[in-house]
Image (cartoon, rainbow, N blue to C red; front, side, top):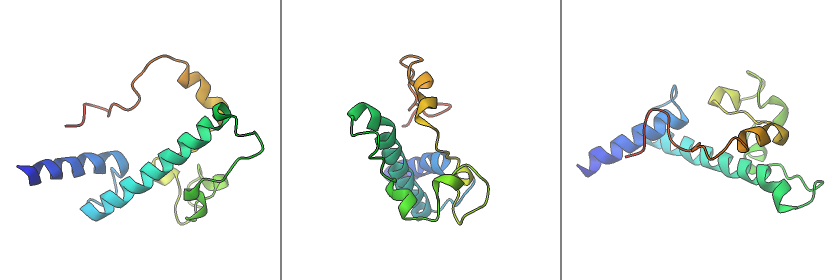
Length: 117
């Protein structure tokens, strides 16, 4: 029962982070770790204006330093060994996020089509 539950959770993670990619457990967990790092960096970038770190102290997120992804190539096909668009991700300007954030208390974290088990 426990192994089946773990398998179900790995499958759910695979559908979230790499729906058309590799399905082996190690790859899914690696993609999950990278996606969590990306989300953490995005949260840092998007919250920077509210934390008043200073508008000239913009730091390049770690995932951009450690891979061949660059901000200029983040939303273009090809261009680098890894593209954010190819992974279903894309950086957006902070000014574009205010309208989404002000829409109301929508649960953005609920997975499409259901809940985690």
